[in-house]
Length: 356
Ligand code: ATP
Ligand code: MG
Image (cartoon, rainbow, N blue to C red; front, side, top):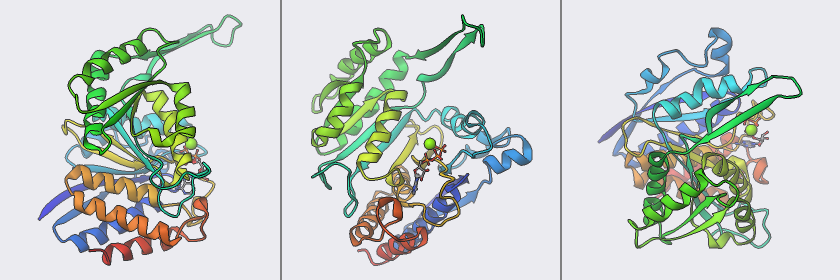
C-alpha cells in the first residue's frame, strides 16, 4: 500500500469548488484501486487569508509544504486584491522556491466536447505543451526611470541561461520520446530576438543529438499560432519559453473547447521538492458560487498528479472516467452542457466505481 501526503491549497474564487470536486474523484479512485491512499491536508491560504493577515501565506509557507509528496492547487486572484500581490504572494514563490521548472500542459479534444475548429475532433488535436517555468521573460528583471515624465523608459529583461534552457529542452525531448509519435516542435522567435532565442535554437540542436529516435522541428511563435489553428494534426510535443508557452497554451485550451478543461503541472523533474498540480484557469469570480465551474481541468491535473506519484493505472482510470462522462454529454455550461459541477463530479465518481 502506497501512502502519499497531499497539500491542498484551494485558494480563491472557483478554486475551492474545483478542488472539492477533484478530491471527491481522488477518493473514489482510492476506493476503487485499493492499493494507495492519499492523506490530504488543507491550507486556507489565498486572498481571504491576505485580508486577515496581510500575507497570502505564512512566511514559512514553503517550509510547511516541503515534506508533502505533491501540492493540489486551485486558483489565485480576487477582484479586490492586486494581481501582483496574489500571484507573487502565493503561486510564484511555490513554483520558484521548489524549482518547478517544467510546466506541462496536455491538451486534447475530449469526446463530446466541440472544438471551435470546424471538422476537428478527438484524435486531431493531441498535444503536450512544455513551458519553461523558471526564467525567460518572467524573470522579473528590469526597471523604470523618469516615472511619469515624457522621457520615461522601462526595461523588461528576459533572462535565458544555458543551464535553464538545456534542462527544459532535455525534459521536453524525454517527454516527446515517451509519446507514440516521438516528435518535438521547438518554438522561438529567433529571427527578431537575436540573443536568447538563438541560444534556444542552438541548445535544441545539441540536445536533439541525445535523442536520435525523436524527430523535431523549429517554429517561430507567430507562425506557430497559424499551424496550431490550421494543422493541429501536425503537432505533438511542443516546448517554448515562459511567455510564448503562456500564450500558446491559452490558445490550445480554447481550441480544445474551453479553459475549463485545461490542466497544468508544475514539475520539479529532479524530485527534490514537491511538484504542484492545478487547472490552468484562474479564479473566475464571474461564476464563483454558482456551482457551474467545470471540474474537468482539475480532474485532469489530478491525473497528472497520480502519474507523477507513480500511480499511472489510477491516472488512466480517472481520464477514462472523464471521457466516458463527456461522451455521455454530462457537461457544464462552458462546454455547452447544463450540468452542475456536482453533477459532473458524481458522474465521474460513478464511472470510476464502475470501471474495470
Ligand atoms: P484570473 O485573474 O485568476 O486569471 P479570471 O477572472 O481572469 O481569473 P479565468 O479563470 O482566467 O478568469 O477565466 C476566464 C473566464 O473563463 C472566466 O471569467 C470564466 O467565465 C471562464 N472559466 C474559467 N475557468 C472556468 C471553469 N473551470 N469552468 C467554467 N468557466 C470557466
Ligand atoms: Mg485570467
